[in-house]
Amino acid sequence: MDQIKIGKYIQKLRKEKELTQKQLADKFGITFQAVSKWESGETLPDCSILLELCEILGTNVDLLLHGGTYIVNNRKLMSIKDVEKGFTDELEKNLFKQVLEE
Image (cartoon, rainbow, N blue to C red; front, side, top):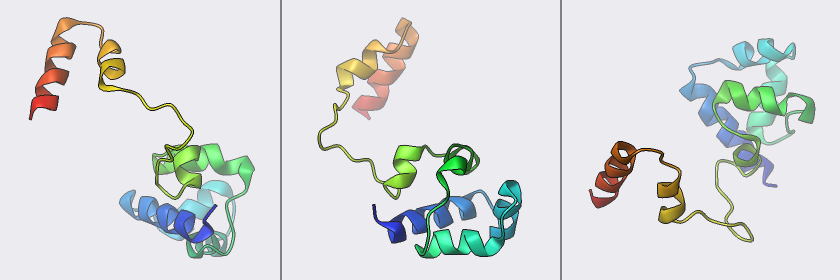
């Protein structure tokens, strides 16, 4: 894990949500200095708050712990056909096909 990359990702998401370090810290009953340490890569958030932190920041734990980068090695990737199968009605399938053609 690259703590610096994770910290920059947390900072980016926090700013996108227009939260200060203090506002984010208050949600967990911690100091803004703790959030600052996450963002500088000095420390990582405690595992007990990861799910809630991700919910607040609009991400998931996997993406957070990889600093905003999806890791694809040794993981199954979905094909376009797999995605298309997920649509239930013809209208959705047609809209999906139009997007792919653009």
